[in-house]
Image 1 (cartoon, chains in turn purple, red):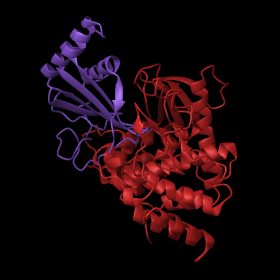
Image 2 (cartoon, rainbow over the protein chains, first blue to last red; image 1 turned 90 degrees about the horizontal axis):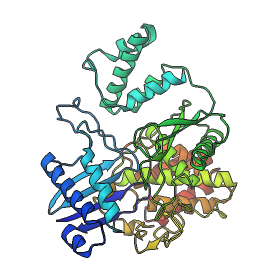
Image 3 (cartoon, chains in turn cyan, green; image 1 turned 60 degrees about the vertical axis):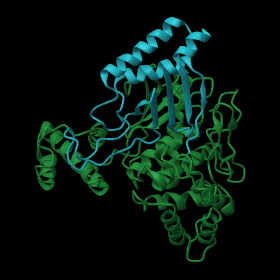
Image 4 (cartoon, rainbow over the protein chains, first blue to last red; image 1 turned 30 degrees about the vertical axis):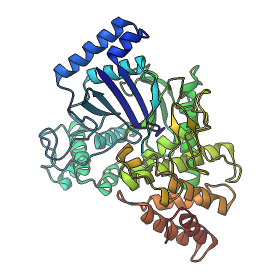
Length: 127
Length: 358
């Protein structure tokens, strides 16, 4: 299971990437095996919750039943956009969140915190 | 009255939740604001606010705020502590006139907001972010090792940084000036945060962030470092700042962060879908134009170059691009200093130097 997190934007404008291959990381024994197992379990929970395939970074758009018609999208300045990919599936979101009634699932934020804990940051060009 | 004005502003920015929004006509809602009881007024204001948002109409917004007397000339700063969480605004830890806190980050946010308010008030005759005395609310210690600062449409928010790559985000006063200026842009031109208008939005924040720093240090354009976020990078990082207005693309070159991607000229304009179309990248082009203008005019950059940019910002529209901005700044310089004046010619030369011919 290969997991990749990328970030772009923010005040810094500096992109970043975190990448971990769980079987390889378990073999290297650099990270507590229990932590990696629970991380993999968290990914499974996110899959079961159906978070992959969603783009929570987009503001609510006209046509959404949950918002009034012709609502202009307002993007918070200096927001950061994250993308988490797991074996080809991905989910996107922004911090701070866009005006999106669906909100960003807590599971997604937990996955972000975990991969940032276990994998080193690498450069990720914004261009 | 300030609290009421704040509530109105908040209404303008939060999602709709009342089923009767937009059914009652605006003129009737305004009458309710004037004559209704407290609950009726609040409902009418919220409805008007949502109506303004639906129309994307800043004139309505201004008119709506105009239903209340000005909040006055006072600075009203409040700093909150998120205590590592993400709930805003957090716990109130310092208000206007309160004694210095033991927390350095609280004091930096408070002082930085004060200098920014003073620059806008004394040099550009602007009464706070919305030009109507809006409170300056800041939240520090947001999130866990949070590597960002942002303006969320209502307030400034600062992370502590991870300590490995980034220090606390209040460490550099230009970061504070930058974030507050996003508010100024929101209430003046409303530059859309995408593509060239987004890069212009970012550049405006860098320009006035830098001016806040120079104003506090009483520096001339010639003496200023023209760096954005100096002090923000942790010791181990190979770099001097996040951006350089003097030499875009030269601020950092680090194994973990990568290389500063900012261009200084239109020939190097970066086409990308990342970062809302490269808003933090292509801002290097108008940033450099402003730097060239400030150096050409000399003295304190906020006196002439800043004045031209500030007045022009009031004329920008949400979709203003670099070429339109250039044209507006030239017209502004002509209006302020005269046709064929040294200042007007310097603005034309500055834009031409970054690849925008007029």
